[in-house]
Length: 331
Image (cartoon, rainbow, N blue to C red; front, top):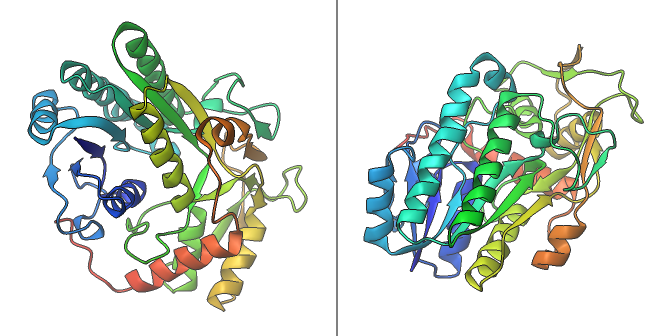
């Protein structure tokens, strides 16, 4: 049996593919390569260039490769972009996820892992957010992910189907072995952007909001190393394959760092005192957003290995330095 990884050539998906290959799991990828990069994957992994909304294609891939589990990363993730193009986000993140679920049900695939987000919480009333907090997304991106979670719950109720929805906080870092990382040049992740500024690929870095009620006035986020995030996916996969029931979990370290702390560490790691400018708050940004992670630790037995800001930034910066000036073809 094999694992289907959607969006497997992207940032987080490619890390999942490497983790599966590392443990000799047969894997197949579906990716339209709009933001994914084939060179980030092992050469022997089959990659089907296509759209997860093409249910006929997906079912053919599932049957051809004997898929028994899906790990679903494919989707659009930029919050401001979702505000400008809500229908595009609902089509790409929600409608196409529905087609993927239908294919899984039709092909008898029981285990489904979904890449969700802390954006489903919107502006929670407390910095430390638990899974039972009210879901009140304030962007089409967050709403599109919430709707997908709702479809998963309904599908699990009606069919022999079980899922794990993993709500990410701020994913950072890169593969410690240097095999893959965040390769999209226009990505908006703070650590990536700061690393690009340090490498001279961007002229300066902007801090959006310096008057929050935090220790230094800038927003605080729970940054999690991508390898620890992927370890949670692997544990979720094993649990579902062993007959585990459906589960929703946060994935974060339960500890936050401010924007200024992140910038200071990137400057320290890179050795570059780059240009930092202050700008107005972005609408809808909470002052702090930190995961309560008791459930993922208890239910999955998840134990992070890279819970250290400097480690995350060293891995991310090393990847960006390697990528500097490198042409990354999509195929």
